[in-house]
Amino acid sequence: MKKVFLAAALTASVSAFAAQAETVRFGVDLNYPPFSKQGADGKPQGFDIDMANALCASMKVTCQIVPQDWDGLIPALNANKFDAILSSMQITEERKKAVDFTNKYYNIASRIIAKEGTQVSQTSFKGKKIGVLRASTQEKFAKDFWGKNGATVVAYTKSPESFLDLKAGRVDAVFVDGAVGDQEFLKTDGGKGYAFVGPNYADVKYFGLGAGIAVKKGNKALVDRLNKAIVDIRKDGAYKKIQDKYFRFDVYGN
Image 1 (cartoon, rainbow, N blue to C red):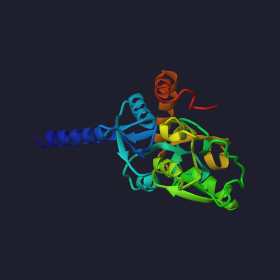
Image 2 (image 1 turned 90 degrees about the vertical axis):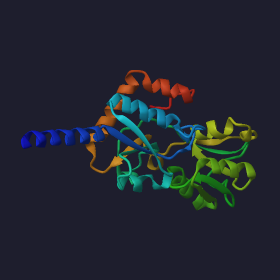
Image 3 (image 1 turned 120 degrees about the vertical axis):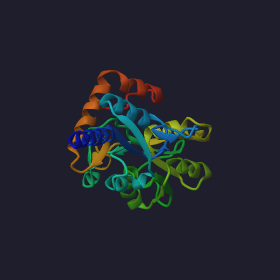
Image 4 (image 1 turned 180 degrees about the vertical axis):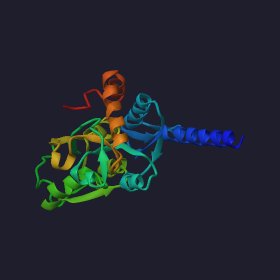
């Protein structure tokens, strides 16, 4: 009888572990619309949130979104607060030193937003201020490209704050993911009189080959599962359905 009870206990323990293992926790910064934000109902929403849910459905696991400010995402991942980062994080060589990445799930160039007609070169912001998201690839590029030529780079914890300061004249430009700038500022009433100025910025040295999903170093099993899920949702139409909900162009890129 003791053996029966022991076997039952072990089975229950294994089942409980399996149930836990079938929940994938994604860390997401909810201050990056249209990719991620907290809705009026308090629930996370946006392209990244829908993408997480689609990937989980493909992998047949439960999806859990764990809110985390941008500059704390990698430390929190490595502290086991979640299993992966799905938060528009570009795959760069510097970040690869701290985490492993899946293949890209989208690739959009970064752009400068300023008053219409603003001329953009490496020296055109000398003595002026450029807003960026703290700890982002845009911050690093801006510091090297414009900061070393006399511009002051102002880092924000939340992207929407940079648009407020641009409108108020506290910064002269904002350097941001093109989709974010378009959806969350230029297409709003606050964006009147402002525009994308200058070229697309997509230098692989800074921006990598697109946004990927980050996992802890050595977690190849999860990387492989996520990569397969990315391929599967692109094949079955789930990816395009999500993309078309938020954008009018191909966000996956070449």
